[in-house]
Length: 317
Image (tube, rainbow, N blue to C red):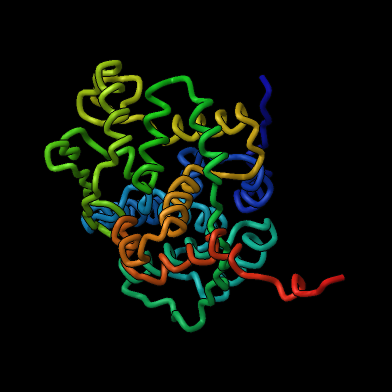
């Protein structure tokens, strides 16, 4: 049957998670029976609290996932008995040992702090919970040549429209997925991005070239609600489908660098900067809360770097 069986008397959930979590996705719905029913009820109440507070579905999914991993690791302990030392031990013997990402570590700490403060009214002594040092990685930017090859290699009009829309307006993936036809006002020449990251709205000017493509795209697919719909009319295309199409297109046009969909947004911002657009306007267009977030693009603008002359060029021989 292509599967393994483990005798119940030899099964230890903590060992199982340590062995398999780095090489496979674990369906925790079946493992939850190993957890205390009282804990499961608390986690479910915490999930409902997050929903009531209008946390994004992605944040809720991440927080609950991190809690399930953590408490499965400590399945023999009650949640009220968890200590700072337990969290530190989890960090060293699970996260670091498995070489999991900075993001995973930070999300685990955030989930635990919010969970204990909300459900147990217990502050996990933030000064003793050290977060990992943030990695100041520069955004990956696609050249205009690579972008042209990328777009040209997409034969499906709907798929091409999806990625051209992300680049044309510097959208996040979730913003494209939630973009409805009613948010596009061709008379006023604006697109409204509603309830985006940080519960913020913003208005963007419509690209003339993009509008021409929209007029060719719409009669072919006739979307009902969302600009880019999936298999079923009235439902947005899924994030996983978009991701698969993106990876397949990179392979088709033989772009071998580790680009992601979000790199289209990075490329939009960087190319605006290289065209001379003021950083303050770029901040507004991207919907950044802080100008410091936008300033990172000043480090990846090739046009400005190329203007710097090396002192080595002054030598004659």
